[in-house]
Length: 232
Image (cartoon, rainbow, N blue to C red):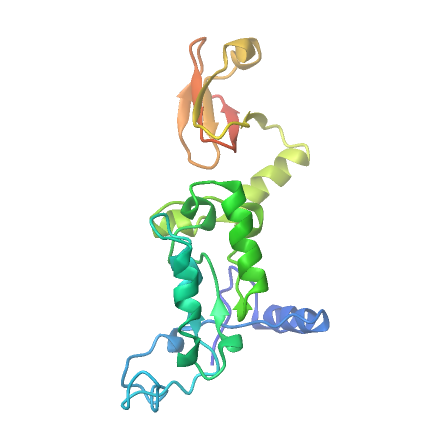
């Protein structure tokens, strides 16, 4: 009926993952295309929303928590979507989330406010339903508004960092901004260590800087810039 994308492994790998997850008391939910159905699909008979509809699905995705934490939303939205639980036969079987592959990442959603970020995760993990955590959310990964940014290849970043720590010949520069505000960081004091290279490249965004005594890099608030020193 299905085949795992070979870039991620095999069906056998998937079965092993499920078995190991079950051994730890963790359930695995498969989201696939047939879940995206129209109003007149047989799954939609007898719904409480309409005499013409009925969701015989055991669980659906609940978008309410994401809406409640939107930039322009009031936390009262949280109460509003919980108040709609009567629409479902079992609200505890809803899949809840704050961010996923179709919407902004949580860290961007709360304008990189760590306190709101933690608050949102606490609510997700303690409210009714089955919490879904999008990859990267556990480490506060940021993204953007476009799908290519939201679905960035976290593995690429991890592999790069692992190779660096494993002793590859790459030369890296890490710049930390421990302020809530975006800052331009002058690298003048580090120029003697940089002048043997030509380019400073942000490994996450791909932005490149010409190395000179006037070089400055822009780092968002409460973020870490990871740069590679290259010769070309």
